[in-house]
Length: 82
Image (tube, rainbow, N blue to C red):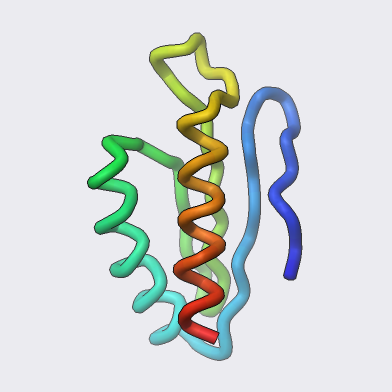
């Protein structure tokens, strides 16, 4: 599995899925965790890929522990799916 990359103060990763429906299922599951953590990631979906960018707006758009915690949680959601 690809690792998160910290580039230009943004934690980034693209998750790949077998199909569009699986990608949407991941986004639905992730939305619950994102909301619980009061986070606001930038994310996009193109067919079977979900790209996520994490940064903390309240910390001058830098990567913080809040972003790292969400990254770990998103990886766990993905692991549970596959």
